[in-house]
Image (cartoon, rainbow, N blue to C red; front, side, top):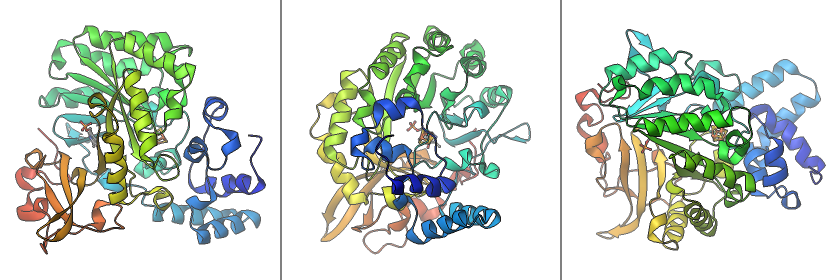
Length: 424
Ligand SMILES: *Cc1c(COP(=O)(O)O)cnc(C)c1O
Ligand code: SF4
């Protein structure tokens, strides 16, 4: 970290009070170009920067640190965190129940897929500065989704035969030991769980700690576990988070990717679009091309969530669409498996199909790629064009309408599909 200036060092101390901060030697030595700091994309992804807080909050937190006012600092940090919308898109809703017990380590929002947050995977190998899961890492326990009991997951799945996918997420579930993951996954390979076809693991470990798959003590065991999934006739879908092409460039990550592929698992990729990190269509095109070259399947481009240092990272929706389409049209068809830009909002995942003019009015054309109410998926709908909008809640319906189509006639509530509804 030879090139860190005094100001950058100070920013880590001040901003790091609010946003949890963690890096490791792989990220520091192999991913960050220290000649390009603080602009370097991976530096920006992992190290707190001054601009991630408002000027006023930065100044006040620095003052409280300098004056050793511990109580004042604690209160201020709490207030700032609460003002950063620590729990976007109703993550506290969609919490399912089994036998009268609320399952806080699970979410069941979309019919086919249950999210599961293993309690041992509530951390990551390094922390992303943009991350919306930061309350889970910073001791804000009331918002922590964690569940110790594999048993409750399995009981829930046995009762919900319409579920085909279990998506392990976190934090990063691959911070948990292989033996823990095996306890969750192996029972799902038995006949009782015929209906579960896809075991999905959402992980940033390929980017932040590829040694998890090659040289860590239980790396081989993890590969054996992946093989077992395949042998049981199920699909292991690895959903890898890559934010920048540099994360695909090291020998370690390449080796890790091919080891995973040798187990029969498939790797799909996703990333949010982030200003200061990857807000350039050339970066995305390069990333998708390199992914395809290594046998990965580009899957999602997300719009950065409305949480944390959103103002530092956000990209207006129109710009997001322009970056997406310029990248999309510059790659061949096999990289166009990617969908986006997509907002994971309360009613569902909303894709920005583009900006166009309909009967003289400039509009955003949108569609659900996931929705609480599956009947509403893939129906184009329209919002009034807004150059500055960065999220769904800033948009209003086009053509002077009062509501979006999904807000009419309680469509989200129909058949009980309100925010607390849990699928049969
Ligand atoms: C994105 C997401 C999923 C998975 O959606 P896919 O489109 O199947 O990848 C499942 N549950 C929640 C809550 C999600 O946000
Ligand atoms: S790896 Fe994922 S969960 Fe962990 S800090 Fe980054 S975005 Fe958040």
